[in-house]
Image 1 (cartoon, helix red, strand yellow):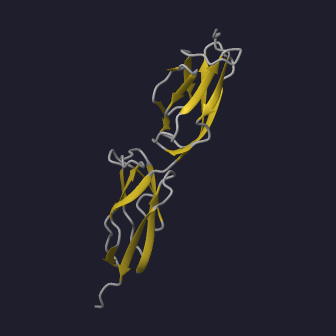
Image 2 (image 1 turned 45 degrees about the vertical axis):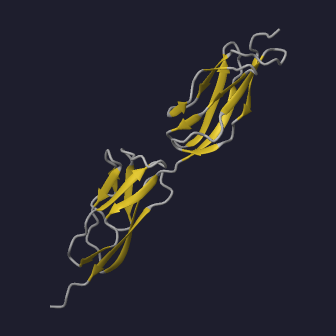
Image 3 (image 1 turned 30 degrees about the horizontal axis):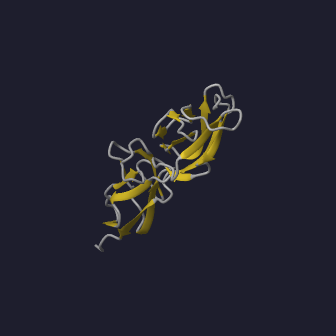
Length: 198
């Protein structure tokens, strides 16, 4: 005879790594047992974590083997803790996972410009997206390497941000744009040539 749930334990799925807005490769699996170690089917398992989490289902009923599983993704990066609990069992099962920030920043326009000294460059325009190519509004883009009209620009509804480089010395200058969540910056080459001789 199967008794009431008495313990819940991790079966598999802990210590995985994924990217933001991407499911972990494997489901998070727990097993519920009674006091004699017999798997308990039909027990309702509730998964919990920090904000920004998405579940394939929650809560989840255990199957004939006392197991419940769920796929998980997050919209923020960092170390994540997931707890799985069942009613009347005081100790939860705990998963530890890692979510890597992996947003992308790409050049839309403004790279490889050449102007005569004293003339203005066109604005430098970038777009920030997630790994699936979805534009990310509200991201703070830092423009650096040369003087800009602004150093920090928020992306618009299409994930776009633009900034105006100020007048530069004669020669080649290098500018870059990045966010805290983009591992690789967008790099710009800007060239100023001398004015023609009078």
